Length: 212
Figure 1: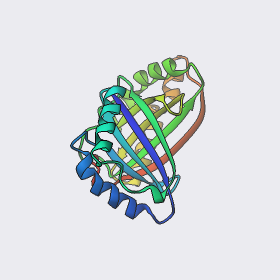
Figure 2: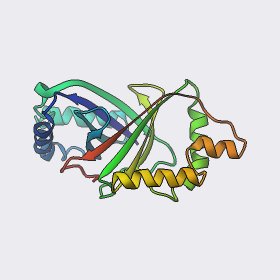
Figure 3: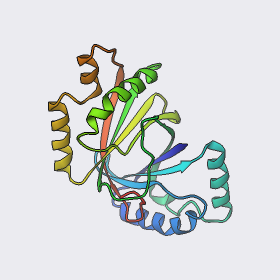
Figure 4: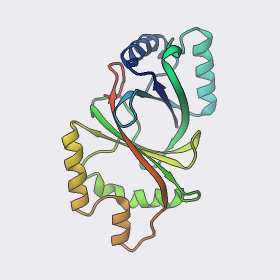
């Protein structure tokens, strides 16, 4: 399975109208394939939407998108509001849960890390080691690495009911020595990995997002 993560930067004050048009257009688009999640940024880079589409592979993605466009079901008429568009093809880690409809938020923290070339195998090994302890404090929504688009990136997304819950969960995990992975690896004398950049954003779902 792959996930196409499409990130659009919007003009200020256009978000409500963009989400309205996306929601209306999605009623026709979803017969071709269903959306996994649709978020907008609450904290971090403002005026940004992120929509996530699951596909079996790149061939299925191309076929479905072509069929939706041919029938006039997609894309929504939002071009006048879009400043920048980015598409990344993400592959889930073996330990990543599948994105499924349901209510687990409504706050989602998306953390995007850029790693040094060649470090991905170390990251996968480290997360397999460290994640079980972290999950004792709260679930993870997704753990992906980039295959196409921005390279050498991995993304992890965490759901929370409130921002206070986010802060307390992270504090408890750190206090217990269960997070971040570098702490766990150091305790056990294992090799770490090199990160070049880290960023995070707090996301909230649109009304029509299957994942809430």
